[in-house]
Structure formats: structure tokens, C-alpha cells
Length: 380
Ligand code: AMP
Image 1: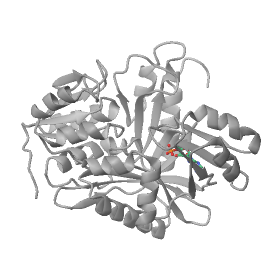
Image 2 (image 1 turned 90 degrees about the vertical axis):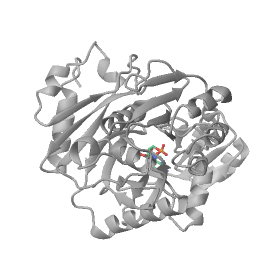
Image 3 (image 1 turned 180 degrees about the horizontal axis):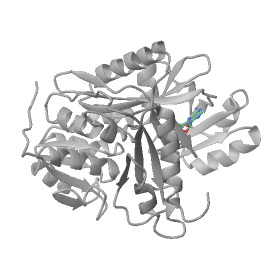
Image 4 (image 1 turned 180 degrees about the vertical axis):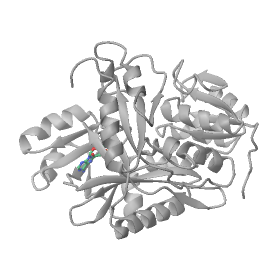
């Protein structure tokens, strides 16, 4: 049954990073109020929300108070404890539902779910001890060892090239719930961002082509010349996942495209995704507005691309040598600067992004790289 949360109502958000910030901006544009709950203070989301609650997710009394003060709850951070969602569920609807979060917040559960519904994933093995890792590594290198839970942006994963690296990789991971994945020498990485409404309507953006640096997304570009069959397969897989998981909200499916033109699902994110940030400037409706519409029971928006675009992330290293040269980047025509209001520019920390619109993915990427380069004080 569709429950419409009308504009003017209050949406609760769990997690307070940049995804929550961009969600809140989209929600406010549609006339909603937003309360955010996270353990942190003066956060990217809190700075633009109506109310910022700074409490641990484990403080279930505070969680209950938060839930009583809002009309619906969503999240921007999927590693929220299950008990927190269960407590909120007693008072108000959570979208996507707790089961979606449960499946996607742990790599093994996610991969088993995907395999179970017949979707191709990167070959993997669960690992619980160094001995198990040694045994499996013998015939499976190169491979990537990942923590089963709580990994993001390349944290909690190590590539293992040969047996001499096995022990240090295991120690560095510091867990006994891990996954050993075959290293895929992929041709490219792509993602499909999609949304499903309370009524089960599904919309998708066309695939974005992604490039990572040090396991962190560096560049996302609109696609132009992907083989039609690949686009069709990616779309069908995404559609099936949204339906089988019964997602109400936004979901991103990250794929590896292999050299023999096969798609493997690498990972799911049950929320707007970094690779979809270019939808803010280059598409009729952005991924954050889709999340607002989906969780509030409204019709989903048009996903037409208005222009080709490229998005580059701005990490803390740009601050090396002082405040970046913002004026330089802003002189680029059709460059859109997004900053997240984070105070401490640490290495590898996502501080903002730049989206450049152009007539082709190629020229958009070149301009985006040049615009980013112009921000640095030190020669790159
Ligand atoms: P993940 O956190 O699993 O999405 O990994 C981040 C990035 O690391 C991916 O987008 C890839 O660029 C790289 N990566 C992760 N797993 C593999 C793999 N099995 N084979 C090759 N590259 C990988």
C-alpha cells in the first residue's frame, strides 16, 4: 500500500555525510523538512538539515525520540545497526526496508542473495582464518581479500598477488569474516543507478562508466558507445535486483565488464551512489530527488540525459599547499562545483566533486580533469 508523505512533512535521515547533504537539498527543494541522526556533529547533512541529532546509533531511546519526530525515515549510510532500524520501525516507516539493509551491508549475504537469484557475481569464497586463506590462495591468485562487513571506498580490502603477501594481507584486515574474490582484469567498470517507488514503478539512468584510483571512485562519465546488449543486460539485472529485494528507494548496481563482454556484479548500494552525482547537473531528475520521491510515495522523475557529463571526485589531497584555487576551476565553462562542507581535508577523504557538461563523454572527461588539475597549488 502506498503511503504518501506530502511536502511539508519531515523526513528523517540516518547518516550525515555528503549523500545525506545532497538528499536534504533535494528534499528541501520539494518543500520537506529534514532531521538527521548520526554520531557526529556539524556534519555535511546537519549543516543543511532542520535538526541535527548527535547520538550513537546504539542509543535506542534517542533513536525512538528521533523516529517519533519524523514522518518517514531513510538512510544515506548502510552500516546502521539492525536494532536501530527495528526500533524505528515501531514508530514510522523506513525506506528502503530493514531487510534490504540487512542483505546489502554484508558482502557474503549480498553475494549469496545475488547468486541465489541467478545473477553473475565475481567468483568468491568465504574466509574465516589464515589457514583457510593460505589454502584457497594457492590456486586462486591474484585475488582481492575483503572484509565481509563495514567496507567502503577501498577500506577493508587488499589485493594479493602472490603467496608471500597472504599473511600481511590477513593481519591488515583484522577480522575473521572475510571474502576472497578472484581478481578481475576487467575491460571497464560501470554502474546503473535506479529507483523503485512504493507502488513498484522502476526507473533507471543509462549506465555510467567508472574509473577508480586506489579503490576509490575517481571519474564517472555518461556512456555513449556501450554495446546495446550490455546496456540491455545491465538494465535487466538491475530491474531484477530491485524487484527481488523489494527496494523502495534508490539502488546502485556496480558491474565489472570483462574482456569477453560479460557483466559481473561487484557490489550493490541501496542508496544514491557517488557514480550518480552527475545526475544533479546532467539529467532531468537527479538521483537524490528520486530517493525523496520514492520514500515519500510520489511518482518517480524523468531520467532523460540533458547533456553528456563527467564527474571527478575532489579528495583531501587537493588541499595540499593550502586552500585550493577554486577561481581557476570556476572559470571552466559548464563546470559545476559541489563541496560538502567538511572541515578536515584528509588524504583520500571525499571533500566534494566537479561535474563538467559537454557534447561527448570524452570531452567532458578531459575538461573535468583539467578543471580539477587547476585547483592544485603543487604541480601534478
Ligand atoms: P568495492 O569496494 O568492492 O566496490 O571495490 C572498490 C574498487 O576496487 C572496485 O570498484 C574495483 O575498481 C576494485 N576491485 C574490487 N574488487 C575487485 C576485484 N575482484 N577485481 C578487480 N578489481 C576489484
